Amino acid sequence: MALRKSAGGEQDPELAGRIAETEALLAVIKAHADNDMKTFGAFIEDSASSSSGHDPQLSLDVTLGSLAAARSCLKGIELAAAAMPRVKKTLKCDVTSCALMLHASLSALLINVDADAGNLSGSRQGARVMGDRAEIQRAADDLLASLRVTP
Image 1 (cartoon, rainbow, N blue to C red):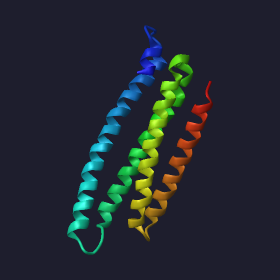
Image 2: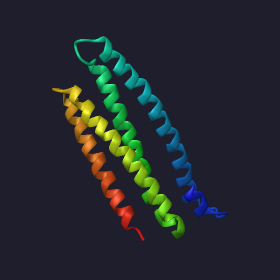
Image 3: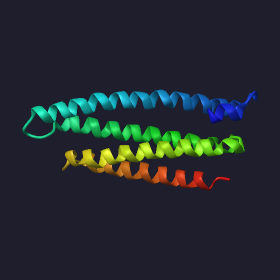
Image 4: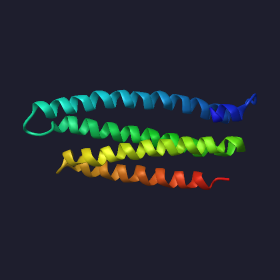
């Protein structure tokens, strides 16, 4: 909304592109939430019915789903940072607040990755997941820090 308000009646193609990209990302984030409900439900159901531990494929699905959702949150923070120069001064705090909420969601998702990656023990995939997790967290932290100092 801050982007739309900043655009006003102007026909700024770059800002219009950022608005479209942001709106498309909302649909992606919603799809991640829907997928999380399905995969986590299957994961819980499997653990309740199995005495031998978690199904490795379900563990991987849950972990990769959380990682993908965290990447989408990072994309939202990147969009906020890229749009900031075109946002009206009075609306910059709204963009920063949105980025902060996305960062909080990203951090919560990465807590899930940390917990779920333990079920991927002994696999190279687990090491790759944790490497990706660290990179996403670092990039999000850096972007958020830059947004908080943007005048």
